[in-house]
Every structure is written in C-alpha cells, then in structure tokens.
Image (cartoon, rainbow, N blue to C red; front, side):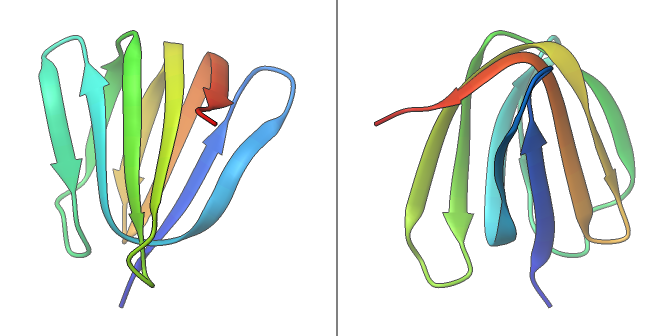
Length: 86
C-alpha cells in the first residue's frame, strides 16, 4: 500500500499522489517516510522534499516554513513556500 502524499504551500497545491518513499528536512534533521511509518508531527526546515512515486519516478520540491504530519500512510506537508524543482 503506497503513501498518500500531499505537498501544499500557502497559496497552492504543489503535488499530490502516491509514493513509495518521501524524504524531507525537519529542524531535527532529514527524515524518510515509507508506508507503515509511525505517526510523526515535525517542523519543516528549509530544504528539498524528495519524493519517489509508486511508479519509481522522482519529484523534487523546495520547501520551507511549515510542518509535516504522518499518520495512517498519509503524509501531509504544509509549507509557507514550496515549489517543484524543474
């Protein structure tokens, strides 16, 4: 069962979809999420969010000023500023 991921900024939805792995930077350091990860609530630090989709493709986004929440295979990343890296 994949992770349901939602990455949003203050003014728009940046990316939503299924993923097998997400790595994000928090104020405590980088953390990786896979299906079955325990619940987490953390403060987002400025840095990249790296998403490996269920089909193996890679998504990169810059994000800062926000938080992330993981619960029941649903990862929500809410950032003040976030944008996909072209």
